[in-house]
View 1 (tube, protein in one colour):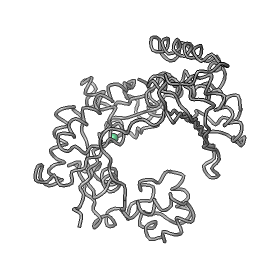
View 2 (tube, helix red, strand yellow; view 1 turned 135 degrees about the vertical axis):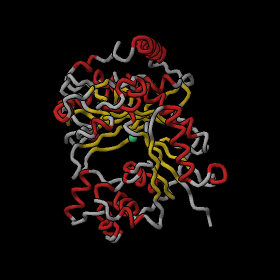
View 3 (spheres, protein in one colour; view 1 turned 135 degrees about the horizontal axis):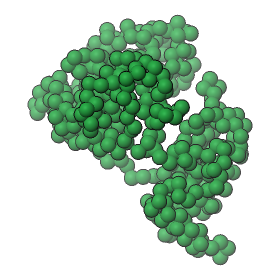
Length: 411
Ligand SMILES: [Mg+2]
């Protein structure tokens, strides 16, 4: 029999707000909200300190609502590079305890401590030490959920450890139902607000209600997702943590969720052009070109999923915008059903070395290559908005909105 696994999920408390407080100790003990740009209507709270949360401030709230709930709130602009640095420092602490560390998000990381009890004591004791070390090295408080698989660890952390004074909770196959089943259905991992709505209409109010439904009825209704929800409700998770270096890159891709639903072909194609430019730039930065382009389009209606995900081989390997975009446009025009679009994505795969290509008598490849090289030089020196396709200035263009962001947030 295989030994029982000990999987930990460590989650940083109010991560962005905590990092800002470490950076500026005068913020300590005060209601702090990290927020895009509070002056703009679309300023959204990205994180709130626990003092701000006590007023009802939540991640995702608009700045004005946050100010209404808590007039003395202190808005701080986000600094993504600080958060990345702090997240890496946390990884370094975790790696002192195990070589099996898998980041899940910027402020959540899985640790596999299976078989480490001789070194660090029982998992509860190891967790205590880890929390202590992270606090000493970074000033950040974490919470740890322990489970026999990643799902149990995640549920233990999100639903229990966050509310405990010792910031720790353990779920096992044996106690999962007793602790988790009484919780409302919306608190199950994988259940979003739409799914919660559907389930409540089926009289599923608690996680236990879902767990007691026959698995087949969920699979019939939602396919793989239904099966996954049923497994989640039972605390079963067959996935394994895959630590180590990411696999060598097989493709480069980029996607965008649109700020509103797009219905005009011209607007959508503007974003496709921007995404293609970005993907080509990334491929060139790796010294690669792609042989196949993949376009993805998701419709705006959740209940009646629409959109497509199609790929096509390029006439010849390429990493220049002018060579890749026509294929993207072709894919889109062929497969788009004309319904509103919420998200778009482009990727290049089958990456080949950029400097091995077939010379052609009919197109002057050196010319497009030197144009690309000149564009890249300008971009590296002056940033992504120094030189761009004029279409980005038209309605629908997302280049400027996205240029100042890392992973969807400002730098
Ligand atoms: Mg967190």
